[in-house]
Length: 294
Image (cartoon, rainbow, N blue to C red; front, side, top):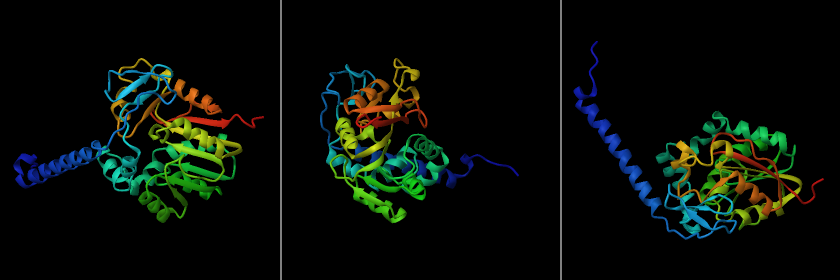
């Protein structure tokens, strides 16, 4: 049987062209909606360092003190609440990024190895039981795994529609609000995975975390981090991951290993591990409060 290319099938060609046009139009409309978020202005790093020009992206500066990359035009907090909604970030934004939407994230995250990585870190550094708080828990795949292991689990999400979705699909306790501006109970383990790069005040975030932790408690953070082995002088930073990470809607900070160690020091944490990672741009930082250390 002869097989002819699409050029000999006008109906198939028309359908293919329609799909491409529809995809382009959808992407354009979504990007325009989120690019129009209202912006603030950031003139200093979280460490108060002066910002130097950054040739690769006009919205970012480089801290002269700690080397952190700083979003000079961060979206306003009230607009970010809308952005991190069920239909926004977890729906439309994931689709145009080519990532699974919230309905399909659990299967994806169990398959790609990230949950296995997180559980191994918890087994190595964390308490065998107790209360776990995860800020920015998303679809709560990790909290579900920990709940099955006997931990008392609490999740936090900024948008109520996301919180409601997670509650209905997991039965877990999910609190709505922007940490650290909300009250949470004490805990034995605090998790923030792919979160710290999104928060407007990393120092306030970790100071509040410090106050929540019971004696012996730990913090596990995951965020994009430029480490010496990745080449500080790589142009652009992070190489092929540059465009994805230097997204001035999502990411307020792109940390370096030096800036994270300074952040830990300023918030009175001891660094247990800053070498682990799930994969590039998902580096791990494990902390324990200095107060009460033996």
